[in-house]
Amino acid sequence: QVQLVESGGGLVQPGGSLRLSCAVSGSRFSIRTMGWYRQAPGNQRELVATITRGGTTNYADSVKGRFTISRDNAKNTVYLQMISLKPEDTAVYYCNALTYDTRDYWGQGTQVTVSS
Image (cartoon, rainbow, N blue to C red):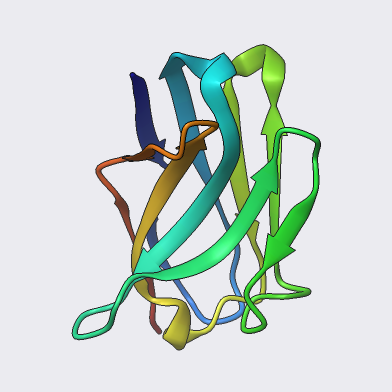
């Protein structure tokens, strides 16, 4: 079992920045890939960024150059640094863990609202 708890969401003006955190506990060594996804009202959940155990990162085209996924193994935390935020980035952001035996775990989500 893996437990994920997100934090760091909030209201920010266009052009602003936020950093989301995902605290990971449980069977951390079973995790192959960590990721951030988001879901806006009326839309499907979409991938934002992923990072593998080996450190390889992947980003959605819409966030490349603005968002950075990283992790702190000592703190068992994965981060999503977001800059130059746009209104279209407004969504609930979810942390995800994919294990080596292809099980998916999700956090409860954190709301990010970009508005003036």
